[in-house]
Amino acid sequence: DKAKAGAPAAAAAAAAPAKPKLTTDQMEKRLKSSIEEYVELKDLKEVKETVGELGSRECFPKLQGIPLEMAMDKPALADVLIPLIDFLFEDGTVTMEELMQGMDDAMEFLEDTAVDVPAAPRVAARFVVAGLIKGYVTWGYVAKVSDAYMKETGFSVRFLGMILKELVSASESAAAAKERWSKSGMSLAQFGVENEEEFADINKLDHLFPIPKLEKKVQSMLEAGSSGDDVTKWVEGELPDPDKDVGQCLMRCVMRNMVAKLGGAGKLVYEGEPKLIEADERNILEEHKDLLKHFLKKECDQTFALFGLQRFAQELEYPKGFLSRMLATLYDMQVIDEPAVYDWKNPPDNRHLFLMESKKTFTQQQVIEAIKQAKPFFDWLESADEGA
Image (cartoon, rainbow, N blue to C red):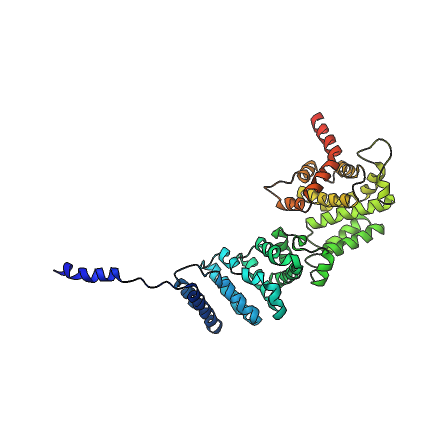
């Protein structure tokens, strides 16, 4: 009957060998051919169809690697190829992890490639920034490849400069670029930058890193006897939307000005019974109280400024009792609040993550030493709380 007659055909079909799986080399060649065709025809969907026909995700990282390699060889292709990667990511065809993995080879050999192809790092920076903005590259990845392949030779500083210049160029505004960098949680020091002002000057990034020049100007204004109102007006004229870095900068300036007015760091060591507040120091700080309070309204900004105070005290090699006195004096003048002080001592790990990052800029030994130096103030604060 018909059922029996069809049985041999069905058995033959079942026994037929499956279509051979493409080798890795074949998949790569198909992807490259498809991407090269896209450069000519600009047909995004054609590339997507080719990707769907591979039958394996093994070569998906090449969707980043091949375009990056092509553009480093011919930089003008970046304008065509970056939108392809954006499309494939936003369409869900390729994942963030696959796209970052696809950058690894180029990142590992980027410094060597730059010898023969000087434009290669700038092209790589464009691909990195496109990914940062669209969400398929993380700053953590950038820091990882910097540590692994570039930091030892110092190339990481040069490459970061290119990335940040491209970030400014690709962002909606300089303010948007600054916000993106601020939210990254990264610091220039993580990439080996030792002099922020010099780095900003070389890469023309003053609008992204205004603090070094701001600090110089404010310092000169304080030395010239400018009022807090004058300093505030100038700062807000330069930076209409001042952030936490401004508050920390002003803390350093005020502290430096106080030490200078006292006659130098040697005057910070007092004879006799130690006091938590010294009148001479307080009188000078009182002149700048309103300036500090104006820029340190938020408790998290106060805490961030205290890390600047810690660094300043450390640079002075901790004159006896100095850090405790500054904490006590600022607290007494209501420049800093109690929660801010405790957040400085133990930064929260569930909010204001930049505070934890600030703590990490100090070694464990430096943190221990700072807490030790601040102990008299915390002992007083805890006893006052118990008494209340």
